[in-house]
Length: 237
Image 1 (tube, rainbow, N blue to C red):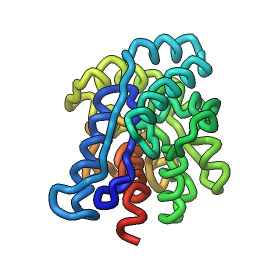
Image 2 (image 1 turned 180 degrees about the vertical axis):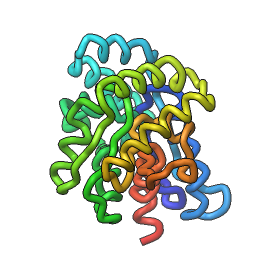
Image 3 (image 1 turned 45 degrees about the vertical axis):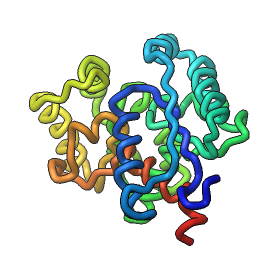
């Protein structure tokens, strides 16, 4: 580890827009901790996105795990000392392989959960891909800390899933899509939620905190900031 820069962060990337936001957050916010123009070293690896899509569409979580491990191996060889994956959905596959690498992983749902606890939230809406909203990533993480997760109704879940894969991961962010997502957040508010997880790493590009009627838990930036804290722990403690 270079003593003046912190631990080398490895980004296991899946979709480009969310991974880019995570990378930019680390680089832009690093100077707040380390000084002007300073941030920890960062390396990112991204396999072709279609490989993840094929595994997800066939419910092949072991295949998702293998893709994560391949990136982890490449990042370890590049000198990474800790790993993050700025994609919520594939954390279901990460659970299968997390212990198969010598490098520590920061888990996106665990970091979001830790912040939710600090805010004393008890009921939180979750937005993301259909597989995320219907899967165990947040339901299990929240269950361990006594938070009740809420998701949209089935039709809205499918609509959001389509918007994510047809628009957001392709870098298309327009007003109609923003309004559709805000309507889901307003529904959470009516159902008694105290906050909302932006659990697709592209949604924070679409929805800024000041847009939302509920406090947002921005999974992309939460993970990036957790990586920054971990990478610089020995420098600023």
